[in-house]
Image (cartoon, rainbow, N blue to C red; front, side, top):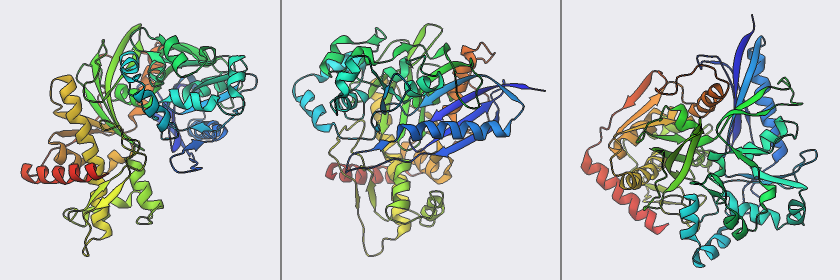
Length: 488
């Protein structure tokens, strides 16, 4: 007997995951396809847009093969957010590499805009700070290459974030659409009016006509056409940026609920309710989602390098054969031996916002081993989040006593215990750590009017890590971290 399933596509920085969820949001099929990043020069990070699309099709095919009798009722899309793509409206052919959210090529442009006094206006309209992390200066740079601006102004080209590129391809070129959560990451979107800002588009020299239409995060948003493995006319019923989807999937539906996703970077979000809270401590204000014409907002802090640090230890230094080996290696020593790693491999994100910062390994001695460096790397991943939480507590006006976690690196028990110890708060990890795919699956289910209760957290078993570290030792580790951070 055929089963109605929701297809959740999670297009990330290092790969694409496809989940087939039933009406109880249980995973019935899963596919994953790795995605390469290209590094043409220091500070430059790109993707091949066609490789992004191919990874989506491969992941979907793998998931479908596990449930051959399933019928796809609809799908949701979640994505790496600030990465930008430009493509031809006729045929959907990309005209340049996709510029990754990790790319720093527009750092000087951001600095010039900041020196020109534009940041207060940008923050008040968008909730963001001026940093090459966001899409606006990337789009501006892209359109300045090879006559692309003229083609975009004439209507020949479309520009958008990865979700809009996927919707365009999935719909056979019929729909150029993004949702409010992705739009809010571009430096071009007024988060109170929920519309593109003509003033900011003019500042960044981005033609509004090239940008996608902005819609809600749920509903009958578009329909598939000509996509292998998906029947024509299948509704795309949920769209959200990956971190907002994870916040939704973690059940952080009430004001004050917070989660941290341990992926390529670390992304900590707190639901602040129906009105934007502009940060006073260099965090971001972002649209979380729009459901049933009700908009929710979040405070966000992002550390650009988290799981990517473990990948660097594996691929750059050759310390590990697999990323999973870091847990046993780090656990083989009781502490870092005074070693401190600052993972500024792509500059520093919130709350520092220093694209010029560089990573470091300090405190080494003749007795330092690979195990000490591995342990210090896990501590660095946790200490970045401590900085984010403390800033978020000041903005929100209340402490975070419980932090929900998800993402691949959250499977590392030692890292989660270190996070609890250095934060001094409980860390709650659900059995299903793929909250991003789950969240957009929930949004799609709601858009399809499939019964999923949105007013309560998903009842999934969780593991709780309680802080065990002596407060004096916590203070010593944090003092070493701040000293190393200042030097970076």
